[in-house]
Image (cartoon, rainbow, N blue to C red; front, side, top):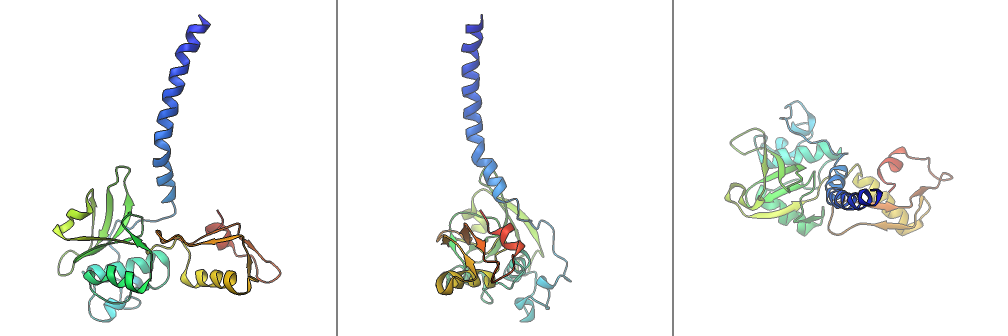
Length: 229
């Protein structure tokens, strides 16, 4: 009797193992996005990122509804610093970024990235387990703000899809990134680290084994929370 139970138990364990293995990548994907706060409702016009106070498109007479004015404001909002792309129409953003080297870019969707078409840009707010992409956007001469989900980005508005610009920095400001790179390349006195990696295909900056030198600089809680693996 015990032998029969054992024989029945083994295939059950195997089935459960296969199911858990299949689910692991999906769980990891959700965890990778857990620090990102999506915008699924229209921004108030009084928010500085979307108003004449901080938004260069508003300051130059092209406010929302306008896809680039919204994208500029959304990048500013999620990163807490001014975007590196400061001008141009929607059709210009992807090629302009590629030429100037402002942000990493590619064909894989990531939260916080700018999705670029031949005449439109939008912000990736979430990615479904089925690969669908939910974007927030504004439309020149049309809808002030909306949220849409697409399974095929190439069919969006019948336009040519160029790719994604990885503008979301996960809390790593450009100033801090430059500071850490300089510490590694020049004197290495601000921080002691074994490796400094900037992946070519993602818009993230990662550092391994980062340990502040407390004799020179105070401990920075942001570094521990955002940069340590």
